[in-house]
Length: 105
Image 1 (cartoon, rainbow, N blue to C red):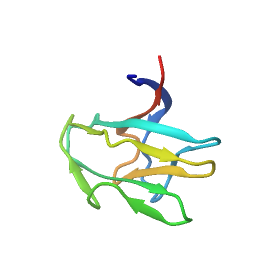
Image 2 (image 1 turned 90 degrees about the vertical axis):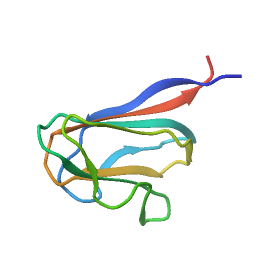
Image 3 (image 1 turned 180 degrees about the vertical axis):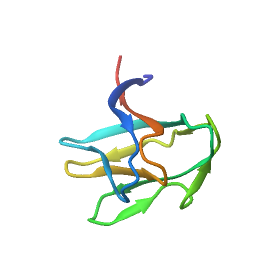
Image 4 (image 1 turned 180 degrees about the horizontal axis):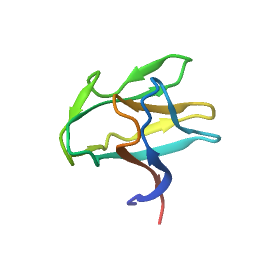
Protein backbone atom coordinates (compact mmCIF):
# COMPACT_ATOMS: atom_id res chain seq x y z
CA UNK A 1 0.00 0.00 0.00
CA UNK A 2 1.32 3.44 -0.94
CA UNK A 3 2.00 6.08 1.68
CA UNK A 4 0.98 9.69 1.11
CA UNK A 5 2.78 12.75 2.51
CA UNK A 6 1.21 14.76 5.34
CA UNK A 7 2.88 18.00 6.53
CA UNK A 8 4.31 17.74 10.06
CA UNK A 9 6.18 21.03 10.32
CA UNK A 10 7.29 23.98 8.25
CA UNK A 11 9.13 27.24 8.75
CA UNK A 12 12.52 28.81 8.17
CA UNK A 13 15.92 27.63 9.39
CA UNK A 14 17.57 29.81 12.00
CA UNK A 15 21.28 30.41 12.31
CA UNK A 16 21.34 28.82 15.78
CA UNK A 17 23.15 25.48 15.67
CA UNK A 18 21.14 22.35 16.49
CA UNK A 19 17.73 24.11 16.33
CA UNK A 20 14.73 21.81 16.80
CA UNK A 21 12.47 21.69 13.72
CA UNK A 22 10.17 18.87 14.86
CA UNK A 23 9.86 16.60 17.90
CA UNK A 24 7.87 13.37 17.68
CA UNK A 25 5.26 12.79 20.40
CA UNK A 26 4.37 9.31 19.07
CA UNK A 27 6.10 6.95 16.64
CA UNK A 28 6.26 8.90 13.37
CA UNK A 29 7.39 7.93 9.89
CA UNK A 30 9.05 10.88 8.16
CA UNK A 31 8.80 10.56 4.38
CA UNK A 32 10.66 13.67 3.21
CA UNK A 33 12.20 16.94 4.29
CA UNK A 34 12.51 19.78 1.78
CA UNK A 35 14.65 22.91 1.97
CA UNK A 36 14.49 25.93 -0.36
CA UNK A 37 17.02 28.75 -0.29
CA UNK A 38 15.09 31.98 -0.86
CA UNK A 39 18.30 34.01 -0.84
CA UNK A 40 20.15 35.29 -3.92
CA UNK A 41 23.41 33.86 -2.50
CA UNK A 42 24.36 30.29 -1.55
CA UNK A 43 23.69 29.26 2.07
CA UNK A 44 25.32 26.55 4.19
CA UNK A 45 22.74 24.18 5.72
CA UNK A 46 22.84 21.37 8.27
CA UNK A 47 20.21 18.72 8.92
CA UNK A 48 20.23 15.88 11.40
CA UNK A 49 18.29 13.67 13.79
CA UNK A 50 18.62 13.62 17.56
CA UNK A 51 17.71 10.20 18.94
CA UNK A 52 20.14 9.55 21.80
CA UNK A 53 20.71 13.09 23.02
CA UNK A 54 23.27 13.78 20.29
CA UNK A 55 22.43 15.12 16.85
CA UNK A 56 23.73 12.96 14.01
CA UNK A 57 23.94 14.73 10.66
CA UNK A 58 22.06 13.21 7.69
CA UNK A 59 23.78 15.39 5.06
CA UNK A 60 27.38 16.63 4.81
CA UNK A 61 28.23 19.33 7.38
CA UNK A 62 27.69 22.85 6.03
CA UNK A 63 26.27 21.62 2.73
CA UNK A 64 26.05 24.47 0.21
CA UNK A 65 22.51 25.13 -1.00
CA UNK A 66 22.74 27.32 -4.11
CA UNK A 67 20.92 30.55 -4.78
CA UNK A 68 17.17 29.76 -4.92
CA UNK A 69 18.13 26.07 -4.72
CA UNK A 70 16.09 23.09 -3.54
CA UNK A 71 17.26 20.13 -1.48
CA UNK A 72 15.00 17.16 -0.74
CA UNK A 73 15.98 14.44 1.71
CA UNK A 74 13.71 11.51 0.89
CA UNK A 75 15.18 8.68 2.96
CA UNK A 76 12.36 7.43 5.17
CA UNK A 77 13.05 7.84 8.90
CA UNK A 78 11.17 6.40 11.86
CA UNK A 79 11.14 8.61 14.93
CA UNK A 80 10.04 7.48 18.38
CA UNK A 81 8.48 9.79 20.98
CA UNK A 82 11.07 12.38 22.01
CA UNK A 83 13.24 12.01 18.90
CA UNK A 84 13.73 15.25 16.99
CA UNK A 85 14.75 16.60 13.62
CA UNK A 86 17.29 19.42 13.82
CA UNK A 87 18.39 21.95 11.24
CA UNK A 88 20.20 25.26 10.89
CA UNK A 89 21.88 27.50 8.32
CA UNK A 90 24.66 30.07 8.36
CA UNK A 91 22.15 32.80 7.42
CA UNK A 92 19.02 33.38 9.51
CA UNK A 93 15.50 33.02 8.03
CA UNK A 94 16.32 32.54 4.34
CA UNK A 95 15.89 28.75 4.01
CA UNK A 96 12.30 27.47 4.03
CA UNK A 97 11.70 23.90 5.22
CA UNK A 98 8.82 21.42 5.12
CA UNK A 99 8.80 18.07 6.92
CA UNK A 100 6.31 15.48 5.62
CA UNK A 101 5.11 12.33 7.36
CA UNK A 102 4.10 9.16 5.60
CA UNK A 103 0.46 8.17 6.18
CA UNK A 104 -1.84 5.59 4.65
CA UNK A 105 -4.47 7.06 2.32
